[in-house]
Image (cartoon, rainbow, N blue to C red):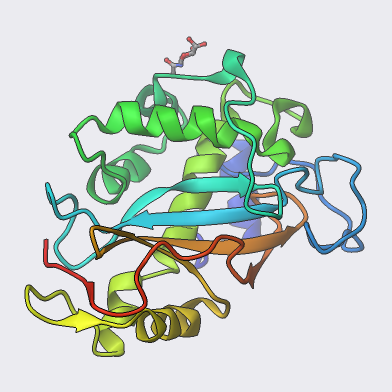
Length: 257
Ligand SMILES: *[C@@H]1O[C@H](CO)[C@@H](O)[C@H](O)[C@H]1NC(C)=O
């Protein structure tokens, strides 16, 4: 719907305050900035993700208990990683918000909350607590969305940006569909090899992924990116996993929800 609006119309709507949760006030990054991790620059700026230069869109396949739609994986989070499999966590206790729903609704992101209630779900049913955990542990460590990076900062603006961006990336990574297209479907009896699962998801992403298993059952996938510019408006480039798979080589179960 936004795409069909003329840019003049968009500006007018933005000026009237009818569009919120947009990222207009993040600093515009010069096109010359290199990709995170690949670049030798280690100067933290609002246009260069550092030290968490790899950003991971992580997903769950929860079956015990089952969460989310039967034909979809669910969102775990968006995590910065120090380009080597290690990461910083809980970087700003002052921004460890526990009122994520209220923050998003206050930014007119009610539709996003509805989507998250379906696809970003806590295994124990406490979505609010899960969202707060993901934001506080991982979101606060993304240096390019610190409040100081906004030119006209409104309170908790970066929180809306974080949840919107995570959902946008998740929507572009339909794990269930990509596996199904390769003949890998949930089953109580069939098993799959690590290489066939990896191949199907590498096709989707354009780079290898981390696969997680619990008791031989596939239950996690992490998609890795390097980013040029800030974490919201920047260019995302798929990169190979930095973490070895936690699944056996053969006999992997992918059980139905
Ligand atoms: C969320 O919590 C923070 C910290 O307590 C507070 O400053 C902010 O006003 C709250 N936001 C909303 C929309 O309730």
